[in-house]
Image (cartoon, rainbow, N blue to C red; front, side, top):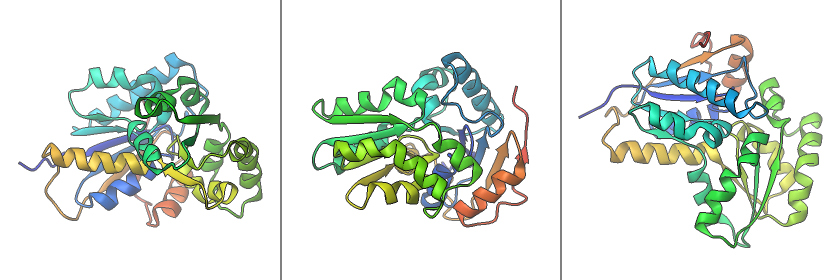
Length: 270
């Protein structure tokens, strides 16, 4: 039986748009409700208790729209609060660590894998744990890239942007020297910097998009559960943010390659 309820997606800010873009491509008939907590971004530098508090508020907001599934499009939340959210909601709750870890393990040829993410994600060692379950002999190099999220939120995402390139080079130089052939973009904000990161890492290094890989898994799993709406086209996406609509709309329209003006609403979380 077709399930016409929407899919809920939340992130600390703009990063979850990478998930939304892929989901709307894979499941063009599905309705999506997206929440970007742009007023409190970034989450990666917050304490564990604060991240859990924010995650529960985000999830509660989406649950108010009778969603059929929840996607945590925030690596920081997944690494800290995933288990809490799974226990609190009787719907499928998806994290963004497992699928990209599997993809990286399939792509690497030399077994040297890089992971970049927020301080909280890197500190949690979530990706290292997932990769070691696949192959304990992987040589894993992890780097926290605290300034990547602010770059995205400011819209400084072009490969020609000198500031973005200088910041990226400073973070990524050590990964180049370590010989990684595969790099997990362990924050859903980071694929918006794909061109910048690719320019620094070079064509020999495969970039794994955590949002896109998770979206592939979500689409397949909901299909297996017979939870899709049954429509081939016509799905709508609603966007909610906790700060400026204008700033979000500008970057979202650019990245999604479609105008989201009039589709974004500012809300307050409690």
